[in-house]
Length: 169
Ligand SMILES: Cc1cc2nc3c(=O)[nH]c(=O)nc-3n(C[C@H](O)[C@H](O)[C@H](O)COP(=O)(O)O)c2cc1C
Image 1 (cartoon, rainbow, N blue to C red):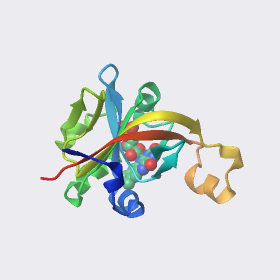
Image 2 (image 1 turned 180 degrees about the horizontal axis):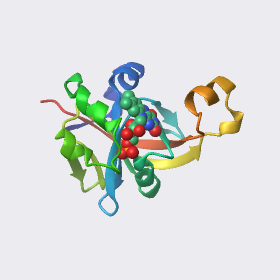
Image 3 (image 1 turned 90 degrees about the horizontal axis):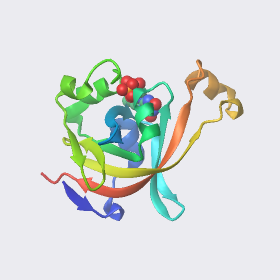
Image 4 (image 1 turned 180 degrees about the vertical axis):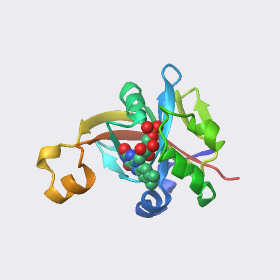
């Protein structure tokens, strides 16, 4: 993996996150880690920092990790890993070891104290700087019905992108 300046990122993020998905990995050496597929979120600039906005439902096992640790990564894998991404988005780390099941590997970065997926095409390594629950009561009715029938709301995490890694193999 080669470290690049985030300004060199020139892909269409709408397509990347919506069609290709990402694997969000949260945790550190002390608490361990868990990973899940995400397709909602964005990137931009806030408080003069490069950030990603991510949305994790309270019910996810990954929620426990992102709450307890500041280290968050977004790993983007090619289409070759479609099945693996589907498993990371349909099974819970509470019930099985998704890394063992798929054969994907978590790489640990000691300087950063966080984990990302070794097989990624590219990775955003981030540190959580703020979070807030989506306010269910103020949402439009169609979104309440479609996205939150059981009120399993998302928490939004604002994550500063500290490093951008690219696999140039
Ligand atoms: C394509 C796709 C996108 C997803 N996007 C999100 C998301 O943005 N936020 C979220 O909370 N769950 C999302 N999920 C659901 C979680 O990935 C899924 O519930 C996962 O099994 C949670 O794993 P965990 O319990 O180990 O954290 C998505 C699932 C798929 C298949």
